[in-house]
Length: 102
Image 1: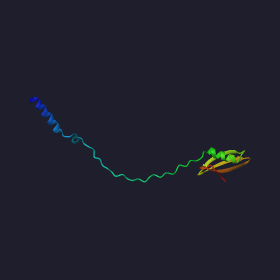
Image 2: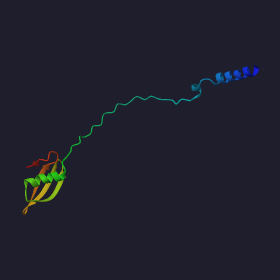
Image 3: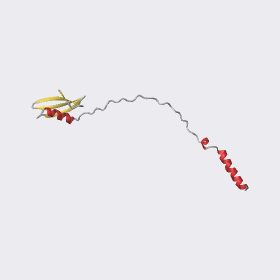
Image 4: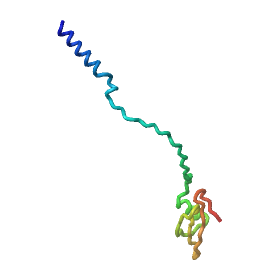
């Protein structure tokens, strides 16, 4: 009986002396910083343009029996150079709509 009482007393003393587990653990210091409101990033809209082959085909439809020389993108327009006979002609094509600009 005496041994059982001694074992229970030692167990109780160990539990009471240790204290709660949270008192033993070191918690990190958490610093709460206020959120800074950032202005939204404004990006330029993505404008789809027609491929150069479509610009060339539009010009070739207007000028049959001509030979294509070059297609270059300059700003919002494609500059299409074609050769008809001995004459070299430059036509402008809108890169967004595909319309041939006079």
